[in-house]
Image (cartoon, rainbow, N blue to C red; front, side, top):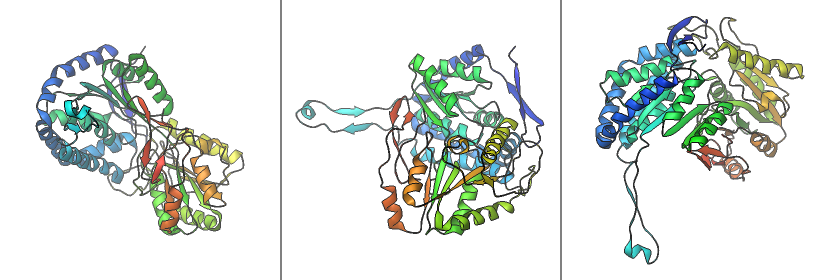
Length: 450
């Protein structure tokens, strides 16, 4: 029998920190119907009217930063410092949409060539999907709901939010904030397991899903049956290329942060040319390989990994679940059994879902720790002969994501980023195949996300 509630546990010690309802499909349908009642009025008040409520939500987030961070930390295993960044990031995100609330949905007038232009005028008019469904992952449990919900609300849509069953409490706070400021009832929550997620897909007009590839395929199939437009943002294995002329001290610092943030559980964050977020593999030119590995492992040895407190002492938090920790452990054990070397041991505690960061060297490109999606504190560092081999191996992946290239030679970097990319991989957005330009590569970078 399906449980009526879901218990939420702190991964740092597995204690229960809260519980949420496991919504039935019938309850989800009722919630969707209520949202549809109020959506036309929400759309009718226009961008300026909606901007007023986004401003009030932003102020609520800032006023409740400490409480939100505590909730985020309690269910995700993050350090206090990382948990505090989430409400701050959401407030900044709300600022962005308030600034552009009137600009983005404005009508566009397009000119037409030839005689047609004499007798007709082409206008693009934007209208929101009445009800948008958003399904978010366990990482960044307060940021991700806002990242997907705020644009839909700003556009005039009503929104039904389904958070991960692992970290739903932060989403509860997000919706609570909307209610607290007295905003119109066009934002609601549907907590629960996979059946709740399916129910959300079945009652909305558009679906945005962020999470694992296997689940993404199921979401795509369900949406296809109903001809419901959708977007998928799926996990990947972000590569970094370190060239021999790079500033190795600087690169070691940036890669350490980009690898271990959240900790090492980032579905898809575009690093905009900064730290290599979603990082799982590093390709280093042979002349500086040993020096880079030494610097990287030196950074890890001074990091503290353990239970979080109100202080910011721990540098790296826990994995989101015991199951995720065990997956990473199996990857490491498999690599070691195949002859790979683990070259670092950090400070850690054995309680909860903690797993000390591991750096693996001498890894073969075909191994599962390279080709799989670990989403954990395990980093593969691969020696390459030159930049050509580095690029070839970096692109040899069925799950591309953000990527970075590190060099002190601007012209060299510009030349490398302009190399053509094989177009056999694509990104599924809004129910159609498109490509994207990734600032991390600085080139047309095609990802397989569906």
